[in-house]
Amino acid sequence: MERRNQRNHNQPPLVDATACLCRIDAGLKTIAGAKKFVPGARICQQPNIRSSVHPSKYKASRGNHNRNQSPLIPGLPDDLAVTCLIRVPRAEHRKLRLVCKRWHRLVASNYFYSLRQKFGITEEWIYVIKRDRDGRISWDAFDPVYQLWHPLPPVPPAYSEALGFGCAVLGGSHLYLFGGKDPLRGSMRRVVYYSAKTNKWHPAPEMLRRRHFFGSCVIKNCLYVAGGESEGVPRSLRSAEVYDSSKYRWSHISDMSTAMVPYIGVIYDDKWFLKGLGPNRQVLSEVYDPELDGWRAISDGMVSGWRNPSVCLNSRLFALDCKDGCRLQVYDEEMGSWIKHTDSKMHLGSSRAVEAAALLPLNGKLCIVRNNMSISLVDVTSGGEDQQWQTIAGKGQIKNFMTNLLSNLAGRNRLKSHILHCQVLQA
Image 1: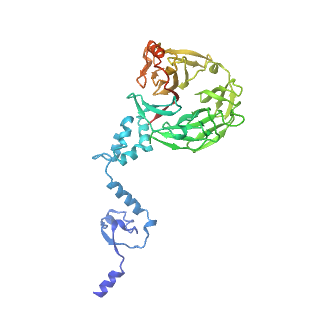
Image 2: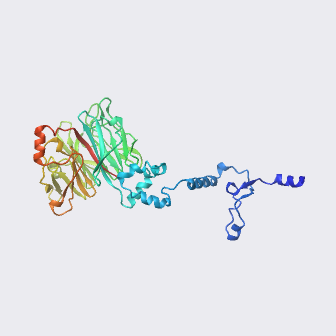
Image 3: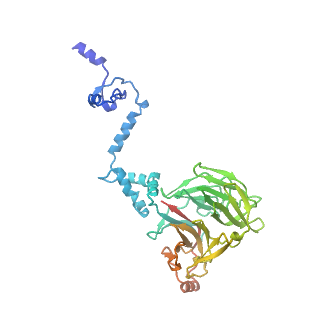
């Protein structure tokens, strides 16, 4: 009896098969060898192996953790559940986040939106940033499918009353605010961005130079800024810089030919066209070629008849031809001049409330946003003019000319807020 106890004492301890770290059965490649191995209590040949240097334990625990998790949708495997959830309309994503933590993590993940993009089910919303009479900035999102406005988290405090800041979209779903002038602290280098995936604001690397009232654009998912103003002498700026979101940093690019405060800009033929006021308040126009990293002055027919707002859609350059945004013009490159494209024949008047503040592409059409938050869509690819214009019922219905005239006389059309920026985000 004593000899048997001594022999048992000298043997390695019994451990559970799943907890054994020596991998004594790792070589059981054949079916015959596998049959000899039965999980359960057994002798561990190397019980002194430390778990901290053996990853198999963590893999096993992670697998157990996943098996213990409740499924995304009871009765369905997770991959099929994800296939169902990515097809839920974007307007309901906020509700999906409230179901449980797993749904919240899924809806806020890049994986979720990459699948929506892969299957062509992303939706484009219009984001409108405006300033009220008291100088405070707010913003809203408009769903053109359900024609509903959605509230958004407040803009960061640094931009709640800022002047002359830039706004652009990178990656389709990130809206950036950058630069500008704080009423108390002056010009800023600050950069923040809003993610349509997480519905939150996030910080980003600051610009290299403080500036406000500058020009900005996006070319090949890189953010360019140029010109503007800053405190000090000289007040107007020639410098320019670019932000590469993939490298998470800003870099200098060539200076402009002349210092300028731009008031209109557009991307056309992969080049950046800018028009603004020089140091002596003279009108200047320049074009930047990112391939050559160079600026040059221009004075052709494109800039002479160029009006704001304008946008490039399907390699064609469009601009509004009237204050209320009810008439469009297009640039004819062969003729070197602007020509009339289409007229809605439903003009709204000349009050600032119905003034067109933005022209942007939306789902293959041109979208016109006015200060009273009314929105029109124009299908510039269709044939008949009667089918081209469509009014979307947003905040502030479009009224006819006589109704607007009577409202102006009665003082009911006073501007409550004016639009600073409009952008389209996908999610």
